[in-house]
Length: 248
Image 1 (cartoon, rainbow, N blue to C red):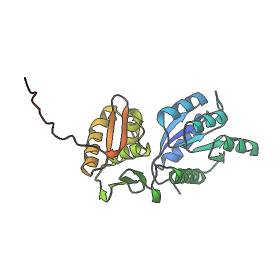
Image 2 (image 1 turned 90 degrees about the vertical axis):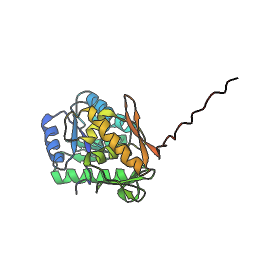
Image 3 (image 1 turned 90 degrees about the horizontal axis):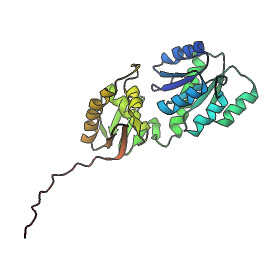
Image 4 (image 1 turned 30 degrees about the vertical axis):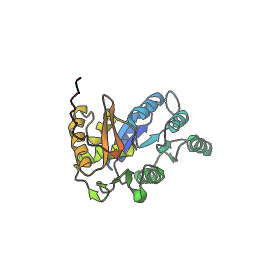
């Protein structure tokens, strides 16, 4: 069963053919792939891109897959699926003890890979404190249903374009943490290899206006860095009262 929402997947393997094969397999489900061919690049891209899932080989130049798994796990709770030709019990146990969530031995079939991805994401969504009951996402009075691309503030449904919804989902999944411009742009325009950061401002302005009209959480711009969601609605500034200094 495929995952219920498009994912940003970091694929790490020193074999370009394997990276290409995995990219083709997960691409059929609408997932976006980020690639790395060595351990150092894998850790850097993990920190910069904030993927939803990591598919990681063990044998690679630089830090090996065990070391990379430990570093990634120390940096967050993103699901890690080791995809390796090493089939020994010792390797599997070591990877799982270091922090991997699952282990898939090469060669593998498309159906098994997609099923494992789906299972990992379901578990991550269910366990995450930022999710809401029933598989949705919530932040304050705002609730998202990723499977249906629906957003509501309390009982009021927001009328969003697909791009606005993708941007909002990326912000809500961050749970109030800052989402850098480049990461947000990739979430909003997953089909673009290098989306223009200038596209963000007008789309987020419209999104912010729609959420504000429903008295939902505010979209906050952090100048020169990115955006984040505030848990509370934006406060409208009232008219300033002009006062005349009393002279003596």
